[in-house]
Amino acid sequence: MKMKKLVAAALAAAMSLSLAACGGGGGAKSNPPAGSNPPAASNPAASTPAASGAATEITAWIYPVGGWTEESNVKPLVDEFTAATGIKVNLEWLAYADGDDKVNTAITAEKAPDLIMEGPERLVANWGAKGYMVDLSDMIDDTDRAEINPAALAACTSTDGKIYQYPMFITAHCMGINLDAFKAAGADQYLNLDNHTWTTDGFIKAVEALYAAKKDTVAAVYCKGQGGDQGTRALINNMYGGTFTDAGHTKYTWDDPNNIKALEQLKSMPGIAFDASLEGGDELKLMYQEILDMAFCWNIAQQLDPAQAHGDPGKTINGKEIVCMNFPSPDGTPILQGGIWGLGIFNNGDQGKIDAAKQFVKWMCDSEHAADAAKISNFFSARSAAEGTDLSNIFADNAIMTEYNKVILPNLGDYYQITSGWAGARGEWWAMLQEVGNGDDIATAVGNHVAAANALIAG
Image (cartoon, rainbow, N blue to C red; front, side, top):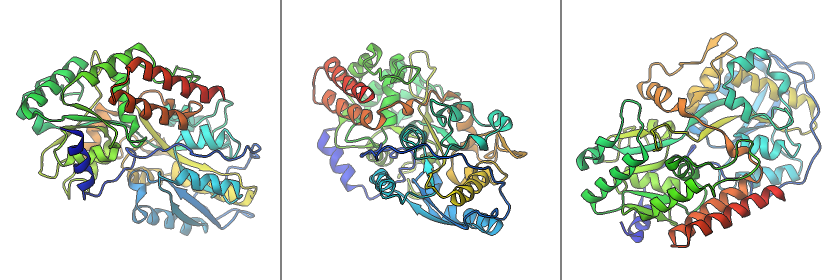
């Protein structure tokens, strides 16, 4: 498909699209001034009236994550918390487009919310590292450490051992494909639908078969901005075993020769477009409209959302079946980019509000109500159990969630988003993809932008 056709289709799309985890995740655009480390705070019990001296009204700012995007989903659970504790919680939803700026402005004006929901790249590596968040280590005992997903807890812990985010729910981002289109082109022979994996060689052959049948664009390496960029990173890293950062998260490594090889392969393939007019959400719309045959910006939230396909989850607008797939890798063993979300508490100097906020965190993350909080998200609980409540299979009655839990979530890889300079590095990544799409020398473009990303760490 020609670039203009893709752009026109994206602009013409009238479909409502939830960008829960696929478009979300903009890094901070401006940095607040440095602050002091927050004081230690007590660990109040949940499901009990507010402790003496605790505040009776707090504010929570929430980034649009999964089902937590909708106030109608969240408010009944929050109202139940208020009824049990006497603590009123004022909810405000942020948008990824300007949410970071709003938070940074509030911090500068000393009007930050008491609570915030998002991921470690913001709560730990950004605001926590700058000293604005309360250390929640005293809320997590040995039992909690045994129950919480180790990768999630590690991502929520700073380099000096402080826990600035209490993990709530997790997911692993993957691909979505139009299975009917694959079958019509004979490309389904390259899929292992038992474990939803494929090899890099199989991916290349599948694109060739789809393009031969369609004579048009099969998939888009979208690079307008950072929306959904976890998909392009995972695609390029997995194809030949490249990495995005080193294991210690001390530098960016996407100049890995295996990543350059993947970019060269993708750029050479008829049917793959490097499209600077699209972000992840635009790509999804085009797959739902059957303009594209696959999407790199996919996860369980997309699979379950009936609004995406006008009422029929997991289907295109014409009823074609969408199937989740792991990203292709040389031997069919993928490493997936993850999503980890949870609650953090800003240290606003009011111990009463910190204590009240901790009651809210306990209620949502470490009580029998954690099951409800996770179910609202349409993601998986970040822990196996909480205060005697089994959370390991809370979606047992949902075949799609059960399938994801079996074939996608086990491939969750390192949460490298906590690397210093993350917000700026994301910008360097999609700018690099744009240059590759424009025909610039790939090795040069990669080298220049990874150097710029690493300079953010040095600075």
